[in-house]
Amino acid sequence: MSFKLHNAMWPGLVGKGDDEGQEPPISLDRMLELTAAAEVDGKKFDGIDYFLFHPHTDPDATDDELKAIADSIAAKNLKVGSLVAPVWPGTVGDSAMGDDEQTKKFLLAVEKACRIAKIFNEHGVRQYGCIRIDSAEFGVEKWREDKAGNTAKIAKTFKEAAKIAADSGERLAAEGEICWAGMHSWKDMLDLLEAVGMPEALGFQADLAHTYLYLLGYNAPEYALLEAGHTDEEFYARYKEMTDKLRPWTIDFHVAQNDGDVKGAGDHDKTGKHCPADDPNGKLDITKCSGYWLEGYADRGIKHICWDGCMFPNATLETPATWNTILDAMIKVQAAHA
Image (cartoon, rainbow, N blue to C red; front, side, top):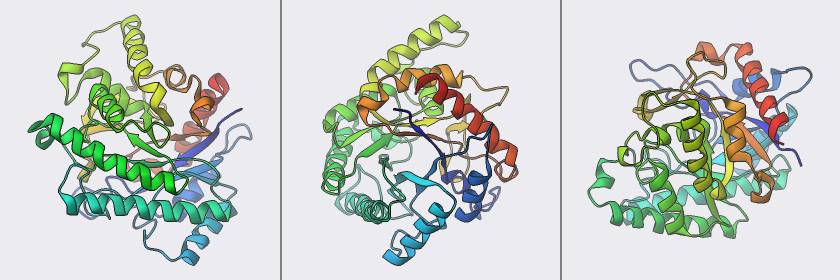
């Protein structure tokens, strides 16, 4: 069984806004146009993954409004795959390690995502994919005040969220990224997944760019697996060590590139910035590294993979060649590992 190729819609939103130094968001319609127009040797994107918040989507949109969105996606011959629940402060949710009021908001965001998923599923535009979450606790300083206690709080919230998802026939995928407390290193991510202990309902979403930074130990130097000046042989040995631990939990996968820098924009500051697929400073052999995560993918229910390229300049996103290059990289992953 081969997996489908999806493009993410959130690069039109993440790091965008009205603050100084930010660029305006790119509309969902425009992101869909750019995705549908991409083509490499007759091959096109099969679908999209999708962030459930303004300005792309009102999480409280009516059923009819959501069906209209589904119609517009289907009209471009695209499917919907994984959905991103609006779990962060300032959207619907709040910190998964916060007080009762905050965690209730987090769970409400998951409920809203499950409702939208159901409408898309019944429409027929969505037939596979997960619902993505993270701890929604930006930065690790507060978490470090009580590592064990705060991880337990996140695990408790995640368990409740996983039950909500399971009751709706959905699975949650927790994306490991160095900016999110309790998920900021490969070891802390693994500890959290094991503390939740519900692999059938909550798994891991691996992103090539973010997990590369796991190796380097940003925000958790005690768990660094690589040192500066490492050889290729050392890199792949450590890469296998990391993927062997997290791959059994991996139920959703992002193809991406990373230049090893830690930066960002807006409310996504101090994290790993994705690079264009052909960036000369990219540190990853995208095709080879993807294989470590995709080994046995079908056994874990993976039916699609998605490109993730947050915080690209709008000029890059508006350039058709950008999407052809991305699609070409994903086709190579598919050919090598499907």
